[in-house]
Every structure is written in structure tokens, then in C-alpha cells.
Length: 353
Image 1 (cartoon, rainbow, N blue to C red):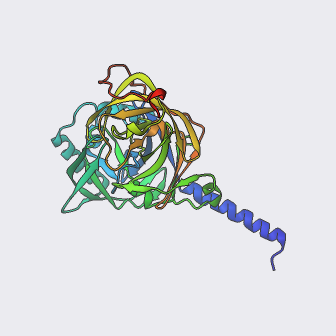
Image 2: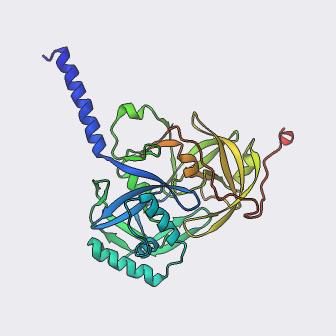
Image 3: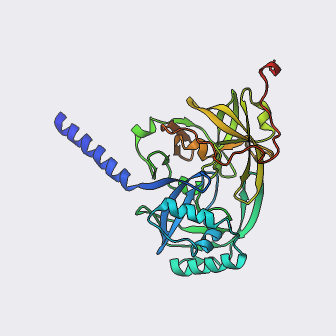
């Protein structure tokens, strides 16, 4: 029989081995800014010989997406070891519209360079944005393994979409196929296939409902509970639908309004207020809340990177976990008076029964 000392050594060895294996499944996840200070979670990866930028978007379902607009602009942007600079320059380049012919040529060049194979028939993608839902014909591509920070993941199929304002997309389904995954914005890491009981116990878990493939969880905003989509592809801290805002109990008016632009290119007018936000037992504090002039399909609103930057997020098929990471909520630097018509006002205390 093994003696106590041998058991201790075996346990320590198993712990070290678990740590080493887990580190191999960790990729560098950068929290990057565009020209106006909006943040995104960006993975730098390769498909074949091509080095690419992917945004992690938990509100996007399906196979990972190749932005044909981004492919077409890559000849205008110099590849750089400074990923922040490359991302900034890419988003700037995407401000110039890309023609359909340019996008088609870019896809053909990518397929040849990366040794991908096009399926003989594409698919119709339904893309739910912040204000509109669009349908578009997409190519389906069978490509080599995608690699992020040297960690190889089977990438099977990519689909294409114009995505006029975005780099490529790592979707919620891609994460769920490699779940549990953990997004660590402060440490700038993404952990794949996590098997760590000690780490799991540091999170507070909520049971998600999936809406169009995006996870929806309850969050308390201004004293009322709302069903909020976890959307790392959105930049605003928190957005509430027009009809849902009437349920808020307390908030503070600001002089700011904003124009939000969705993944389909739609523009939404938003009134900006501030309110206390809680995610389970986690008190995030005062957060800028965009009250949109339109409603959100299947939810009361969506939480973006201005709020989610404060939280580490555990993603699994049956649970979504959160824990505070020490970062503070971020307000958009693009806010200003008169950006659009201000429609919504916070309830006055004297109006409450």
C-alpha cells in the first residue's frame, strides 16, 4: 500500500500535470480598442499560411465567420506585430465601403492561399443584429485547422458574410464545441476545454436561455430584473429595448445620446442613462445604459464589452458563470449631446406608488 508521503507526491504531480495541460489549452485573448475607444475581444490566429484577426462574439451563432469585407481590406492594412495597431487600422479601413466584386475576389484569393475547398452549395445565414435581422447567401468553406497562439483547434467549416464593420468572428457555437471555455478579459486569455474544479468554484453560475444561439441571463438593472443577452460583439456597456425600459425602477438621466451601428450596418438611436447593475450577486456599479429606440428580438436588451470587460465569463452548454475581475465599466467616448433625438427619461421618485 502507498504511504501518506507517496499519496501527497502523487497528488502534487497530478495538480502540476493538470496545470501544464491547461496552459497548453490557453490562447492569448486581447482586449483591443478601435478609433473611438470601443473595445473588442480579439484572437490572432492562422488558417493555412494566412494570419487573421477574429473577434469573439458570444451573440453570433453557427460556424466561425469570415468577413469578406475584412478579407478585401487586408491589402490596405500592413500586418504588424503590434496587434492593437493592426486592429485599429483595419477598423479604420473598413470605414471605406467595399464593393461586391472586391469581396468575391478576396474570397477566391483566400481559398487558394489557405487551401480551402468550397462546398458546391452555400447556405442562407440569418443574422440578428441590434436593430434588424438580415438573411444573406453565404459560401461554406472547408479549411485547414485554425490555430490560436499555437493551440490547434479543428475548424471544420467556415461561412462567409460581408460584415461591413468587423473582422472575422469566433461564434458562440465554436466556443460551445470546445466548452467549457473561460474568457478572461483582464488577464487577456481564453481557456479551452477547462477541467478545473477549483477554478469552477470561483464563479457564480446562472442557467442561460439561448435566443437565436446567443445566451440570455437575468441581470438586475436599476432595481428591476431584465433578461439580457451576453454579447461580447457589442461595444456599449448595456442596452435596453424601448418597451423594456418602462420597467426600470431607478436611474439617472444624462445629457448624452448615441448612434449605435449594428453588425448588419443598421443605425440605432439611443438615449443614455446610468443605473446600478448586478449580475447575480456581483455588483458591477454605475453603468451607462443605452435605451434603444427599437426593441430586441427575444430579450430585454444586451450587455456588451463596456460591462463584460469587468467580468470573467465561464461558458458551457448548460451554465454561464461570472466573477468580478477588478476592471471597471467603460463608457463610450463617442457620447455627446444631440447625437440623435432624446426620447426616454428616468422615472421620478415622486411618480412611484
